[in-house]
Amino acid sequence: MPSGGQTIMLGTKKAVLLGTVLSSGLLLTACTTGSITYRFAVGADGTILATSDGGTTWTPQASHTGNDLTSVSFAGTKKGCAVGLASTVVATTDGSTWSKVSNVPKGDWRSVDTYQNIGFDPSPYPANVIGTAVGDNGRIMTTVDGCMHWTKRTSGTTNDLLGVSMLYGSGNGLRAFAVGQHGTILYTSDGTTWSAQTSGTTHDVRGVYSQGSGIAYAVGEHGVLLNTTNAGGTWTAQSSGVTTRLNSVVFNGLTAFAVGEAGVILTTIDGGTTWTAQTSGTTRELRAVSLTGSDIFNVMVVGDHGTLLTTTDGGTTWTSQTSGTTKTLRGGVI
Image (cartoon, rainbow, N blue to C red; front, top):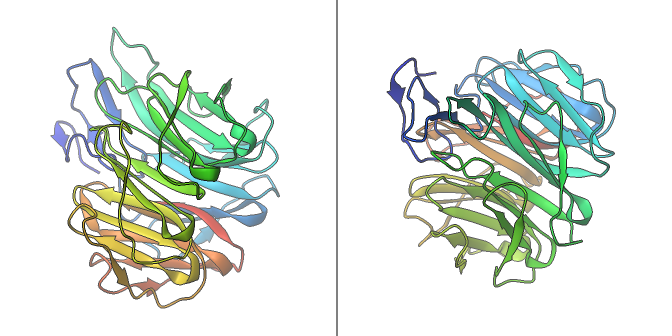
């Protein structure tokens, strides 16, 4: 991780900013461990796996829940949060010991995104991890204290929400996108008031990933792949070249990866003008894809039957790692 005064690609979602005070008086670090060696994966029956050596060895961690975990987010190597079914939220402040969070709003939670907000007066948010989670029946909740307390929000929809991504960066606060059933895309500029956006599709949108600059990608059923460059003012369909379900997408600059059903991994290096299928080496469903910092070469994918894939060359070659589990892995983070 970079040390004091070093900045890596300001304005990119997967950046780590340490020791740099932004013009708004806030210093922000994004949803990532900030290290290519520290990685986490979560999944069925409360599964949590961790590695500190880039995935050479994966170790199970006690989640203190038997409920399925659907998504995980980290702000640095120690502060993490995972959400799941039956009102489940678990959190860690040391990267190894997890605690079950009480008094979580009722619901099956499907996705979470967080980042570190280090506040300096005047700051509208405390110096802590802030985040947003979404779930079934249009449920949304937010946290401003490291996932320990959550506030229920009104989404304006009863469609299941399947993915969330926060815009991080100077002055972005709790701005976020949420996506879900029947082409649902929602946007908030304050974490409280959510507005529907026009996606141009009626297919379920399952994953979304954004940048502080207002650029975002969204993916979904039947190979749906959408892009916006103006915080969702307009969404444009891109040709994915597949009709299979896409579950997750990440990007950095002009390079992006999308993963989904039947072992599909797609990549673009030109901002989505052209997408190319990569050889994953599996036909299992891939559930989540993650990268970190300004590094577009080190990428991790998790999926069904304990699938863990990694690349160190931007996807030219993908390597299967031994997860030690046959459980479905639904969330992962580098």
